[in-house]
Amino acid sequence: MKFEPIDLLPQKEPMAFITAIESVDFDAQKMITRIDVKDTDLLFQKNINGVPSEAALEYMAQSIACYIGAQDIHNTGETKAVAGFIMGSRDLHFALSKFNVNESYYVHVKSLFCDNNIASFECEIYDSKDKMVANGNLNAFRPDDLNNFMENGNE
Image (tube, rainbow, N blue to C red; front, top):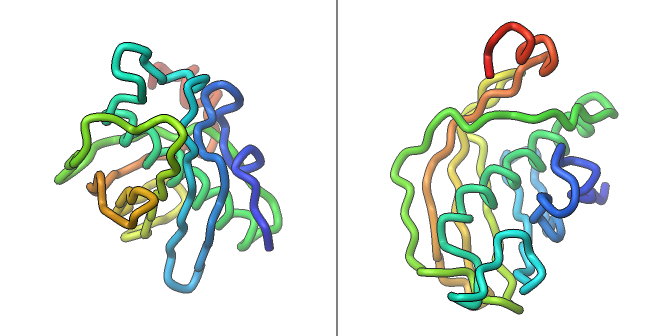
């Protein structure tokens, strides 16, 4: 089955940064997404002619959202593309100062733990030469009912 990021992400243009789903393996609980960095990206900064390395966190988070959305479709036939929240990170490292314009980067996410609401993922980002440029573990939370969650003061 082919998955499109726009169908899996709660973010829409210009906040959706995932260009494509490169591969998904539900048995191994892994996904690879691709990000094509452009000078029209919302996070692009002209003074560095690129996207700051800190965007790696958002790239990882959106890749996790894609995996969870694809997993929903795989398991139930439908997706719940609802917002989730990053609850924390461990051992987050950036080996680059910026994401270069007109280059592609590949985000590898592997589920370490995932239930209906809580998830933990190992994340790695590679450049087109297969060099790791960022990595870390992210913990995320996805409420069953986002509106109810927000209305009850959980902003």
